[in-house]
Image (cartoon, rainbow, N blue to C red; front, side):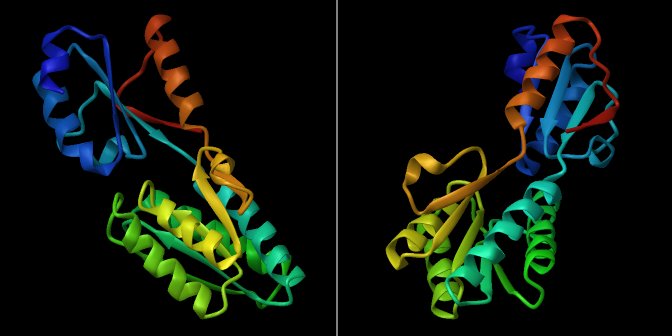
Length: 210
């Protein structure tokens, strides 16, 4: 982050909680540089830097839609159980899962929703193991909310011939086992943030909700 700021980039964008401390520290050091961070509330950053804009999303809404569909698909297969594999227990992940549960209950009351956390964003084997356990317990739909690790959960869905649901972006390219994806528009948020920098309308010290 500091290297980019020294190179006089006008806007530097970080992604996720893991970059929060780095963004906060660098923003304090370079107050004339603008920063944005995906999935992090600006008010939670150390020192409350006023040159940082948080990019937040309504993950619960996308989660609700795929949960609704998931419950209907489970019912169609004669079951009443779906599941989710999260990465870490962080607000964006929990919002996705909360919406998923609410959507399932609205579609088919009584649908059982199980969820587990891999405590990892990268290791696909960890997510695959969790998903296989969920499927063995009766889940007919697996929603991955674990980044690259979650690809393992979708692989488990494919192996066991149940539906998988992707996250963040359209993951249907992985195969016909991916029923749909919960997309939240990070690409749009980043585009609009860059546009605000170019238009000289960028405002730090706050969040932008998408």
